[in-house]
Amino acid sequence: MKLRSRPQSAFSGVGFTTTEAEAVVNHPVRRRIVMVLMLLGNVGVATVIATLLLSFLRTSQTGNWSRNLILLTGGLVALWLAAASSWVDRVISRWVAKALRRWSALDVRDYVGLLHLSGEYAVLELQIQEGDWLADKHLAELKLPDEGVLVLGVQRPDSTYIGAPIGATKVCPGDVMVVYGPIARLAELDERRHGRTGAQAHQAAVAEQEERIEEQQAMDPAADEAPGH
Image (cartoon, rainbow, N blue to C red; front, side, top):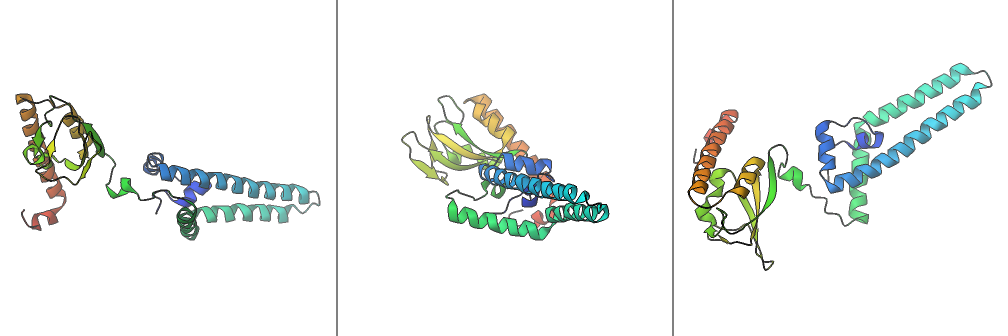
């Protein structure tokens, strides 16, 4: 596992960006790792500084101020270099990975990073109820990919789970759909009711997705070279 926030930042307690802090808070494994690193870092830094200060005060009584000042400055510089060192980052990362494999059963795969669950995209569960636009329809009929929504799985009321469902899979009241897509679209889809209003909402969502695709193609000219474009 590679932490998105640098290990030496956690160890020293400084250097986190807003994005890195959110990535840590929203990921249970990262929270536990960073908590341990910060505790170790705080204890270690406090110990080193306290040792340097005590040494400075003890030897200051002899009148050798210049030597003590050099030692104190050198110790602080060494701490700063350790916090900024990429070598320290690699060593801590390897140590964390080995420790997790040996002493932990945690699932350290970074699904948030793999699915790019940031900004406007998310994986959500939709509870299907009577009267929903999604209810009593096959996935091929719903055409959710045209709205930018992917169905990752369907959980039946009897605990049967259908992973990577096909177009012939029927969505029934009581099912739970696991879907991936823009958060705003998923929220609207969860509230969409059957009938004419639901059909109009589907057409509007398809049109919005087509505009999104055009914007993506404008940002990525190489997409026009792909088959089918």
